[in-house]
Image (cartoon, rainbow, N blue to C red; front, side, top):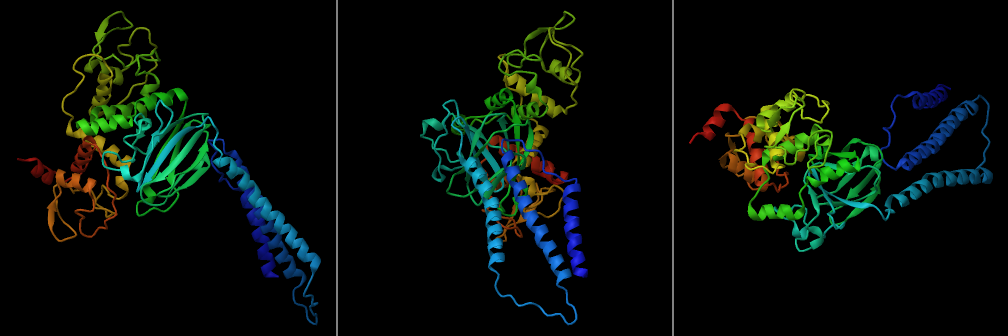
Length: 484
């Protein structure tokens, strides 16, 4: 009897928990609301059988409990009961399978008007590729993967020259446009998963898997790896930003094409870290929503050709747009307002390095002479390196507080003597850091596993990461390293 009461309490508690629980799934941000419907139907069917079977056990325990002198009726076979059980089970299984098969069929039946986005996964980061103006992605393969070509695009395929490469964990997508997501893995099994999109798919080395969806709600959403892929699996995270098509196009135009990256590698040119920092800040703070970069009129003055130009202010006076004016306009935007624009900009409190980065971006978009700035300060490089370390997932394995992780902590690392796996010693300087990023297995520090993948970074990115690691060093060691 006591066990029967326990079963009844379990059923009642389960139903009440489901009805009264404050936890609910986040709202779907894509067209796949049918996946939620399928899960709800599954919950109803399994919940019905859970309640029915548990209550049946409770009733059986009460009704057929042992009574003195009672004898059980022996009935080895009951055709009617067996047919009922088989029928109900068949209907339940069909109810579980059929809706899922229908939804999955739609999941892989891509609309003809969908554009393509390629997602490339590797331990423990994401990269993305959009088709260029021709609307077609170039061919790719593992045979073309190199330090200069980390996504393995075919350099002889004309269709791939204008492909837009996103070497970061954040990708932007336009609202209300269907996208076909092509999935590749460079090393091990991964799984591309965006919870609010209700979409996920395995990434298998040597295969290209795919699915499609349509973003329907603007916002920033987590991108997760849902397949264990090694020690840093938990840090393989990214962001998907769903925004208006106009904002997406503006963001996309700022990203490099495959041909531009190859040209940079060939000529040795590297993107200006100050400009790259400014571009990241402009996106983060929403500057590009009010200040166009193509000369078109917007809520605020456009940045193209702005630096060095004479502007008429709201009081009728004129001013040349130089570094001092830009700094003042960022910190006190209403102080000297350009004529014809409303005083709607809020004040921003930025560091000197961040101000230099934004101004470098504005100068790079102007037609005036002297767009090239002075050498990038070490502090600004360190900020750039910190952002890069966060983007690439370096901090998942390398702590900044001296605690032990998958790899050596960066706290006090720069300038220190380290013992390698082969027993030799090496000083951690810029050359060692550069080599450890490009060929991490060559000189592994003793006591740490050789699990870090090789990274193909530009010269500017290598300098930025080195500067950030050096900024975590002991001041005495850092000074010794910099002294002649």
